[in-house]
Length: 85
Image 1 (cartoon, rainbow, N blue to C red):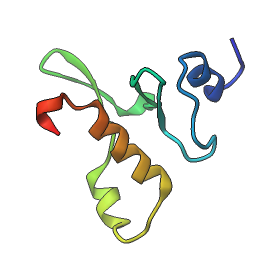
Image 2: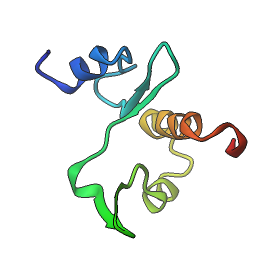
Image 3: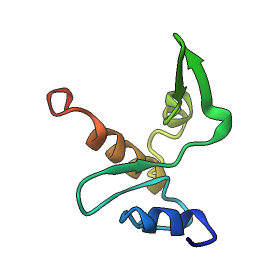
Image 4: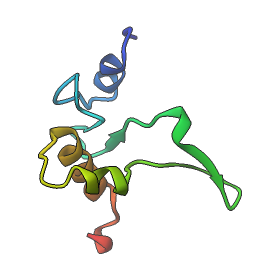
């Protein structure tokens, strides 16, 4: 196994598009892998949950085409069940 997060995504067959701003990737089989941070985990209704986006931050950057945000939203959309899209 490699030494950094990029190597981990590569091991899953989902290389990051960009090592600096990508927060996730999609494998050749269509699996979506999202990077999450430890301080974004909370227990809700006895289940471990992680925040994968921050609407307030995104709204404050509206009009600012940050590639990381655009890609993150695409990954979230791809991870939804087919009927939810």
